Amino acid sequence: MVTAQAQVDSARAALAGVEQARAMYEHAIAVLSGDVPAAVTIPPSPLTGTVPVVPAGVPSELLERRPDIAAAEHTMHAQNEAIGVAVAALYPTLTLTADGGFTGNALNNLFNVAHRFWSLGANSGLTIFDSGAQGAAVDAARAQYDYAVATYRETVLTAFQGVEDQLAALHALQNAIALDDLAVRDAQKALAVTLNQYKAGTVAYTSVVTEQDALLSAQQAQLSTQTSRLEASVTLVEDLGGGWQK
Image 1 (cartoon, rainbow, N blue to C red):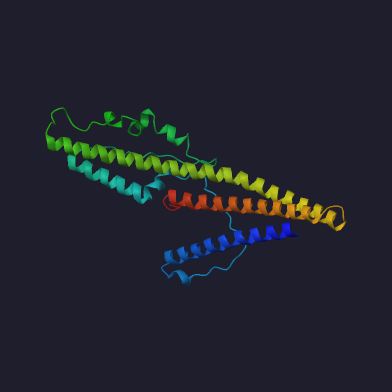
Image 2: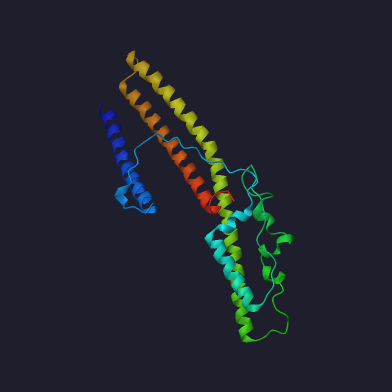
C-alpha cells in the first residue's frame, strides 16, 4: 500500500503543475480576447479537437501575407525606387502537395537557374548599375538595396523553412499518435489481466500498481503527442500567414 500511495502522491503533484499551466493559458486567452486575466474560465473537458489537414494545392503566395515578408518586400521596393533599379518579380511560385511540403522539394528548387535570385551570389545575376555609376552616394544606395534584397531573401526562405518544418512535424506526430494509442490499449489490457490475477490471489497488489503506473505513463505520452500535434497545426497556420484560405 505504501508503494500505491507514493504513486498517487506523484500523480497529484504532476496534476498540480498541469492545473497551474492551464490557469496561465486561460489568462493568456483572456488577454488576447481583450479581457482581464480572471475574466475567462474554460471548464475541463476531454481533448477531442481534430487537427485540420492542409489541402494539396495551397500556393506559396499565401506566405506573402506574413507581416515579416510584407515588411521586407516593401523595404526592398523602397530601396529599389531610391536607385531606380527595375527588378522582376522575385517571389517564388510553388504549391503544397498532399504529402506535405512544396512541390519539387521547394527549398532545393529555389536554387536553380530559373530562380537565380535565391542562390548564393544572387547579386551577380542582377544588373543594378552600369559601369559609370561610381559616386559615394550611389555606392551607399546600392549597399542599402543589396542589404534589403538579402533581408527579403532570408525572410522568405525562413518562412518556407517554417512551413516545411511544421508539415514534417505533423506527419511524424500523426504516426506517433497511432503508436501511442496502441501503447495505451496494450497497457489497459495488461492492467485488466493483472487486476484479475490479484483478485484471484495469484499476484500481489504491487503488480497492479506497476501496471497502473505503466498505463498512466502511456496516457501521459499520448496526451503530450496530441498536444504537440495541435501546437504544430497552430504554428503552421501562423507560418502560412493565417491559414490556407485565400
